[in-house]
Image (tube, rainbow, N blue to C red; front, side, top):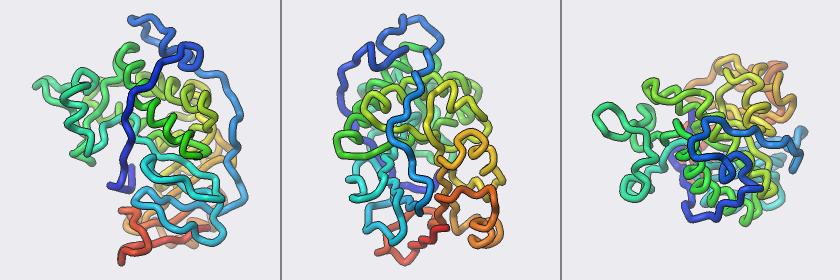
Length: 284
């Protein structure tokens, strides 16, 4: 589940360094596994502050907020722990033609030969993570965006659509996604960034142990009674975003629940800015 249409990613070339990418550059082309990255504590997510989720556009940080997530095309929030959003397992809408023209073999194809799309986001095409060679190439492309986040001054990254395998019509597996995630987390750690698991509570400890994620970003864990699943793995290093159009009970109920993360925010589904009449922001 994702809550915004304003998601963009910078795409550029990135030199592959074997000692950084671990199982990426150094893996044999036919290899089917990725070596889990070494667990490193790089930047600890604050646990005693409010959070805001600004993927629909950057704006002034609300009072009491010390964690802000913004898109990779925006600048990090000054004075806050800043998380850089990256769509890492599917194509961005504005980059569709680039992928079709120059990276078409990295897109998952159906029996009809057409790219497999995300039914919930029909302007996004799934990446083909089924082979080590393709995962390495995808990681190199997304790696450029990771580097850009670090250069801009972000503290961490979150990788969206980790669960895209579940929308692949059986062509991809959970393991495929974790293998690509391990490469991306290694890139992030090498750039000095912490890496957040986005959604996929069903992974249990695998996101932490197999991919090396440092914290979790959940959408609607209170709504779907999944907060404990994240906190059992990441402790207090969990962020939750609830949405006004599908909230279970009241937001006060969500904040009062003992399983709800301290860093929980209520937003409008489109994650608009305060200039919009649809803008909603509340924080526990």
